[in-house]
Every structure is written in C-alpha cells, then in structure tokens.
Amino acid sequence: MDNISSDIYKEYILSIYSNLSNKREINTKTVSFEYNPLCGDKILIFLFVENDTIKDASFSGDGCILSQVSAEILTESIKGMTIMEAKEINLEYILKKLDLENLISPSRLKCIEVAINALRKI
Amino acid sequence: MNKNRNEIIWKDIKSDFPILNNVTYLDSASTSQKPTVVINKINELYTKYNANIHRGVYIFSEKTTAEYESSKEKVKKFLNISDASGYIAYTLNATYALNQIARMMEETYLNEGDEIICSIYEHHSNFLPWIEVAKRKHLNLKILYEVNIENIKKTLNRKTKVLALTHFSNVTGDIFDIGEILDYVNNTEYLNNGKCITVIDGTQAVGKIKIDIDKLNPSFYVFSAHKVFSPTGLGVYYVNKNIENKIKPVNYGGDMVNHVETNSCILKEMPYMLEAGTQNYESAIGLKSAIEYIENIGIENVEERLKVLSDYLRKKVMNLDYINAINIEKFFDVLSFSIKGIHSHDIASFLSERNVFIRAGYHCAEPLVSYINHDESLARVSLHIYNDFEDIDKFIDSIQDCYKYLKIK
Image (cartoon, rainbow over all chains, first blue to last red; front, side, top):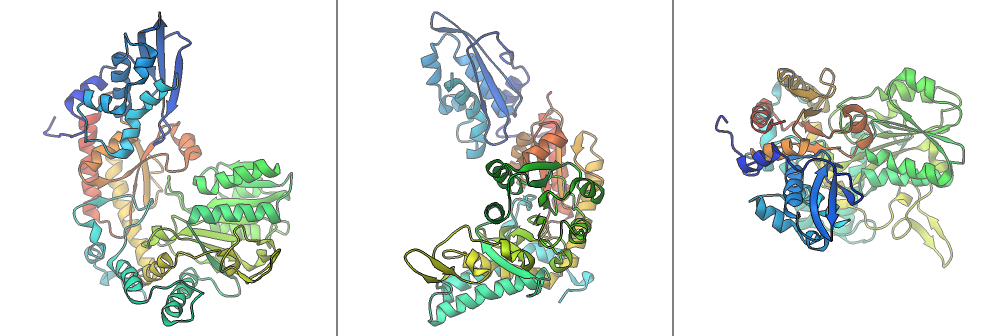
C-alpha cells in the first residue's frame, strides 16, 4: 500500500475489520450495551444462551476500528463458554489476541474495553 | 507596541515554543503550547519570589501579590476594559467561571417561568450549567440553532433573562457577530442593563482575535488562560458593573472576607469576594507574560496570520473530495471534518503515529456535533501562530496516507 504502514493498524487488524462476521443482531433477550467514554459510540452485545452455554454471540453499533475489531474477537472467543466464564475475559486477553500489547495509548484502550464492559453488564 | 507585519519572522515565532521541535501540533483549540518567555516567568516566580498573595507583609508576598494584580491590569488593557465598565475575576478555569455565573444568577435573579437562551454552538461548559439551573428553577431553556441578529430579534422576549452565547465555535470555526447581538440587547429597553444577562464564552477567541469588551458591553465574558499560551488552572471572567447587584459569591472561605464572626461575615469588595481561597497566581503571572508576548507581536498580526494559515488549509482541504469539512467556506482557525468510513479516532491515532497531533470526538459540544454531522464524531484541526505552511502540508500528506491505508469500508 504505497509503503504506508502503521504500528496499530496492522494488516492483520485491518483484515479482521474488513470482515466482521459477528456484526449482526441476534433475536434474544440477552443483550446489553455500553458507550465509549472517549467518543460516545455505543456497542451492543447479543448472546444466545442454551443450557448455560453461549451458543452464539454477536455485536452491533458503529465505532472505530479498534472497538469493532475487539468486539469481533470478544464475541468469537466467548462462543461455547458460560456467561460467567465470558465475563472473565479482560483487556489483556483481547490485546494479546490482537497482538497489540503495549501499543495502545491509555485513551484508546477505552475503545477496546467497550465491548468487554458491555458484556459484563449482562 | 504592534510590530509591522513585515517585521515578524514567523519561523522565529515557532522557535519560541520549545515543545514544537519535531511535532506538528494542530490542537490549539484544546490547549495552546507555551513560549519560552512564559516558562521562564514561571521559573522566575518559583526561584525568586514565590509566596502566597494578599497575606504576607514580607517582600516575597508583596512581589507575588503585585505580579498577580498587575496580571489583571494586563488582561483589562488587552481586552479594553475600563475601570468604570467592570471587573476581572479569576477562578479555576472557564468551565468553573461559567458554573459560578449560572449559580449566581440562579440565586439572585432567576425565577420560575423565566427563559434562558443558549445557542446550539455552545461548548458543554456554557450549556450544562444552564440546563441544570433550568431544571432546578423550572425555567424554560430555548436553543438557538442559528446565531444571527434576525434570529436573536425573533427569539428574545420579555421573559428572556439569560442569553448564553459562544463568541467563537470550537467546532465550526465560526466567529459570531457578538457585537451586533449585544448591541441589540443593550439597546432594547426590556433587555438592557442586565435585565437579560449576556454570558459570552470567549474561550476560543481571546488571544486569536482583537476583542474590545467595553465596546461589546456584555454582562459576562469568559475565557481560559491555558488557551492563551499560559499555564493551566486559571479561568478569567469579566463582570459588568451594571449587574453588580446580582453578584453573590458561590464559594466562601479565605481571602474573600473583611470581617468574620461566628455566624456571619463581611465580604471584600469586587472582584475579591469572588476569589475564595488561594488563587492560581502562578497561572495569573504566566498569563501576564503571555499577553505581553502577544502584544509584542500585535493581536492584529496574530489574527491576520491565522487568517492566512486558515486560507491555506481551506485551499488544501478543498482539493480532497473525500473529506467532509464543516464550514469549509467560512471557518477561521478551527476546522472539523470527517471521512466517510474512517472513524475520527482512527484518523487521529493514525496521524499521531506520524507526529501530527489533532483532536477527535465530540469536542465537548455533543449537541452541536450531533446536529451538524448526524451523530458522527469529528476530527478537528486547530491552528495557532506557531503553526506554519509546512505543518499544514504535513497534515494533508498524513491525511492522504490515512485515506489510502484505512479506507476499507
């Protein structure tokens, strides 16, 4: 791409962002949302739970690349977990999955935390 | 004394700001950088005469007090405020000043059924205090969506007790014709002489354009020192003498009283009754030095330079058809924009990796951003005299890279 590069917006991150398979709404009552305190963007998390197991998870709401990609990774990671287990997923887990450890400024960490915080409100 | 415009070497101005070595700082609407003279002045305070103001009789305290008081005289001269017209009071920041004003008016003047008018262009600081007062006192809060004299004439009425307006929008870069609006208020029998309190937020204006308070004649005019090359922690507000009967301190404590008994006190005269506790004399002394710095360049030259830079930025941005630029034809100094498919925070982070610092989000004016940009946050560039054409070129190059690299959807 014309030798343009970015430490944060790596090809890997952009490829997840260009194909957000969990960005869809599920018809369920198990839903919650959170606002990004940095910009006010809202992320909703939807869970389809059966026998105490998350059978499907998705999200909706527009936002920056970091918030969207972390919501995608979070919803993908929690499929098959109990809600209790899902709520234990933390910032470090998502950062590691995205290979973004030590690269994100404190203010932008809020973008990554939005989906986690939305899920924890369920 | 204003310098002749041709005598100013803007490259030298940039080198007056030591932090700007190797970074492109385009967020002066948020806070300004500080010139060496101001930094040195603060150093001088702490190494040569620091002591609390208004309290000691020893040399240090007398010197710090004199510097603090002369800072106010400097502000008055800079903004053309005569002793007959009103006072300058210091507080923590512009937000705090506006809250104090709203609380004072709530306590001394506003009654159920009265009307407050705020423009949609207000920073949260000149919006939220009035929303809260309106709720507590059952007042009607009306929003002015277009700030012009025709709309003012249509909207203001006998019930209007407060008109809260920004002089210069921190989002659209509009400078409103406050003079014409205040002229109307001051010449309308049922609004003038403090019947309609005019609260002008000059936070973006002071230090960038020439301001003549005596000519404008508002009830209050507020700004923040840190946006004028000074340290943080100082809000400045002008109080018109014609509303002195509506002034009652919100905060009580040290240094604002002449006499105290167990159940009462006698307040100091204006403006000292508004300054409870130890004031931020460091920032006040910094502000004096910052105004001297601006005076040495000349505020007219500052305004002209910002116009030239704004026009250059306007021309460059107009060439990029993917940028949705707010108020591109008219903006002065502050340009907000969005790029379809790229979030404002991603733009700002991408640019930050290139040492180009811009702001993103709602700019503490969420109702306005929602109104003008359909709830989508905005990236924002704002200029000051230490910026140059090279900074704007670097911003444009980085935006072009950002668009090429992040435009996925």
